[in-house]
Length: 589
Image (cartoon, rainbow, N blue to C red; front, side):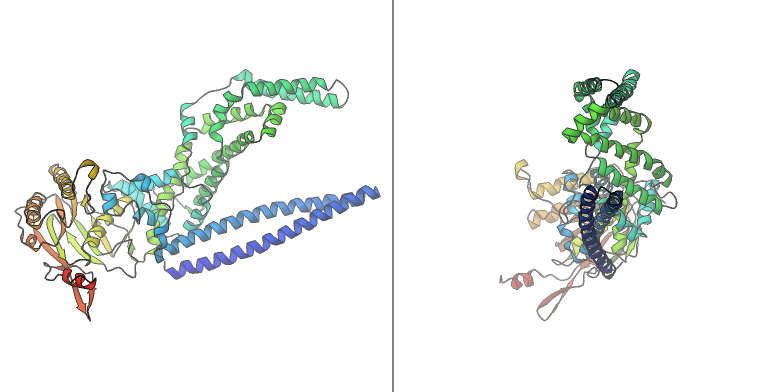
């Protein structure tokens, strides 16, 4: 879709919001007038001692109640539309570059030992996760982060992921609707406390208690009725109510063990039901792990659990807590129903909620297809998975706006590929484009290009290498560790895409060239595709006995004292440099 499509959706949403606000104001006026009319009719009925004003009052009260219900539904519609506009604004931000202000960067999932996350902008500030993520739940966010990893997956798993992503790829407005509904869920929401309870506790209050909590309230209400009819003293029913309250207070802590996991989940469970119901209406058949029959199975139990949560939240109201327990032994009934629900459905809740977490991850990945006209599904090659092979046709980077992107094409087999070029010419961007596209492919996401095929390869990187003063590690030594790890993984025969930017930039030129030649010979094997960017033209002449050595370059040109780049990769080593021009450009002669 183009930016204009989402701008039109925003205008429509804004118009709807204004209409809802106008109607809301009208409801407020009608409620105020009807309430005043109700007061007048009550006063007139009292003065006239006539049934007609009383009948009018009843009709006005019914109309007042109707207005309250209608206003409440309108308020829900208004909140939904406000959330929908926020979702549309997020899509527009992905076009304008404002997505870098998104709150969720996935930093809580960063693994210090997984350097690819930082090297390839997978997680963290200005990352692919920040660009894509729409998940509100902690589990949905975690699932998305767990899929953006540099390790290959089997073809069956990839097929499931691609089916889910492709399903939402073709349903932009339905995806927006789901995102708008999900915004009712608090950010990083989790039901893990409830799931842990359901796994660990299988307590039953016993048949005697289950009978007692019905018998006592019935006896108390019968005695109350008899007391009101002056058949027995009122004190008899009051004694029973006091006994019931005493029993409830004595068991307050024990019941709390069962009731506490239900707190603050009522609205969220209602939202989960709305989400699953909406998904069910969208799904004609099973797609990936999204199964409409499982959704249908989940709707009623989750809805009933939401009602139990609402009953449990009575405990937050001190007066209601005492009154309902004195009258009905309320807490015991909540515990009884919850334990019954647990026995019947407790083992399935996690599976049902996973349906939505799966959808959150899939919708996040489908964002690429929603906003990029060049989005295509990668193909995982399985002919000879032990020999790495990558075919990139007009591939470009997701985080660079479509109108600014310059795609490049390259077919890679086991080889050593030396990429030279001037500063800012596009070398590092191309390395990140190729490597991050592999990670998106494993996640089940589209990539940006005309075609992308690959065998399962482990993506290993050495791009953003920094020193570690606390551990006494210099930049050069840190890069040595990265490359040593590549060699050790290669020794195991694992197919690898090794990406190294400005090899050994942390040391002097003489040592850098000698060290780079030695390292690259170790990385020139039949199970590796190695790409290395460098400013050292001497490395263009490196030889390897096992695999071909290819040279590519990016270049610039000058026009009217301006430095211009075409960001297009060409065959052969680079012939130009621009360092002296850049020094002059910033005033350093």
